[in-house]
Amino acid sequence: MRLIISTLAAIGLSAVFAGDVRADAAAGKAAFEAQKCTGCHYADGPAREKSIADQLAKKGPELWYAGSKFKKDWLNAWLQDPKPIRALAYNSLTKKNAGDHPKLSGGDAGNMTDFLMSKTSSEVKAGTIKPKKSLKGKSIFNKKMPCTGCHQSASKKGKVSGGLSGPTLVGASKRLNPDWIYAYLKNPTHFKPFKAMPTFAGLLKDKDLKNVSKHVSKLK
Amino acid sequence: MKKMIKITLLAAVFGLVGLMNTETAKAAGAAETFKFYCAQCHGLEGKGKGPNVTKDFPVTPRDFSNAKEMSKLSDDYIRGIVMDGGPSQSKSPLMPPWGKTISEADVNGLIKHLRGICKCKGKAG
Image (cartoon, rainbow over all chains, first blue to last red; front, side, top):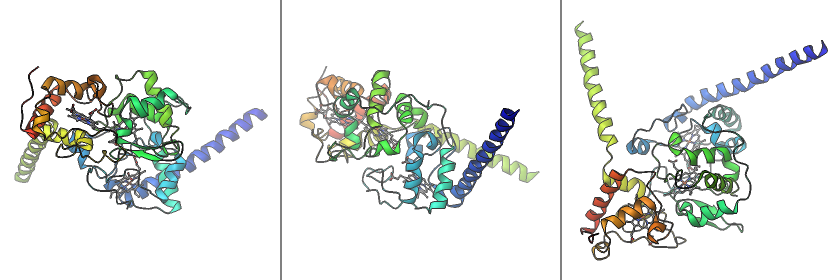
């Protein structure tokens, strides 16, 4: 009897919590629209780009799978202090990133984080990639494949080097969900139908896609 | 009623224009393909000075406008290195393999585009 009551109480409590989270996400959705985030980002999947021209017409990255891609703490902090992720302006090869992304107050950032974290993709399976040191992954990233040609990363000593056309992978361990990294490498066009990054699935074995995902998910 | 007809007509016209738009967008031209995938390293003019070629970049991509050097490369060689990457032709792995990203027809378009930049023909074979 007691068990039943406490179970019922627990269910009641979790319903309240779930209700809370939903309220925040709903406030976040309203703020996302009110503050015109939708002018540069779309947050409803699936991917909409049908051509290179569609990709180039976008003013900011798609956010419809943000909840699978980002780590929550990073997202909340970045929205309040948005430091450049891409060295170049979005979709440009000539202009520098001006670092002028809209900045949010703590309250708005919290609500919008809840909203964006509710945008997940079933392509991303939780628990596939354990962020562990992978020498094989490191050698693929730094030597075998052209990853560093387009992405910056930091050496053990903190020296940053690499190409500028891709988002920086400095700090990827704090920013990206390891399971998303793998899902993206395995089926990139599900997330980005037209991307300036080559598809490596089918060229690298599945095991090596996992190895390189592990390596990226450890980058500081 | 007249208004209705007008609206349907308008819709039909816009629909048609919409259709035509997607059709042209789908068949991306070689210049657009080059700009989107290749210029990040090879530069918008193909001279090897894209934004990825920073001082850390260990190799210098060839200047595609150099007719003398480019005429030494056959179309098959270019097809091979674009589809399968630098190492397939004993070149740097920083030249990516594009075979899983762009179609063979796109690669043929790119070869023509490169020949347009160097204003040269490739050696046979």
